[in-house]
Amino acid sequence: MSTAAREPAGMAVDEGIRHLLLLMPRVVGRAKKMRVPEELQSFSLAPRHLSLLANLVFEGPMTVNDLAARLEVAPTTVSLMVGDLSRQGVLERRSDEVDRRRTIVGIAAAHEKSVNAWLGSSARAWRKVLAPLTPEQRRLFVDTFRAYEDQLAAED
Image 1: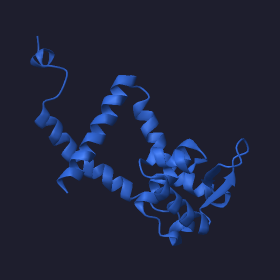
Image 2: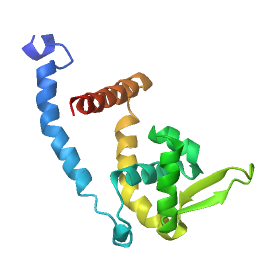
Image 3: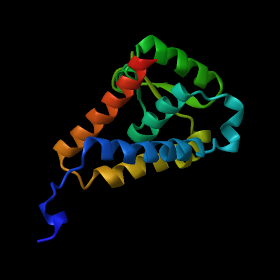
Image 4: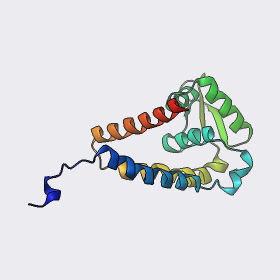
C-alpha cells in the first residue's frame, strides 16, 4: 500500500496556508485586470459601486432595501450610491408595477451590455466552481471566505 493511500484526504493547516498565500495574490491580480469598459471609465466607479452593479447583474433589478440587504449596508447608503449612479446614467429607477410606492433599481439599458460583459464573468466563474459542490460544502466555503475577510478587517 502506498504512503499516499494512508494519508488523510484533507490538507494540513500550514499546507493550506501555503497554497492560499500563492493563490490569493493571483485572484486579486486577475480581479484588478478586469478593465472597466471604456464607456464606463468616466463614471469614477469605486469598489462599492462594483458590488452594487455585480448584484444587479446577477439578480436583476431590485429595490433599494433588497440591494442593501445583499450588500450588508444601510438602505441610506445604497440610496446615495443609486442616486449618484442614476444621475450619471448608469442606473435607472422605475416604479414597481405591483406596488407603486416601491422603486425598482436596474442597470440602464444603454450600459447593460457592457456592465454584463464586464462583471458577468465573475458570476459565471463562481457558478462553475460552486455548482459541483454539495450545499454543505458551498456553505463551508462561503463561511470560511467570510471569516477570512472578517479576520483581515479585525487586524486593520
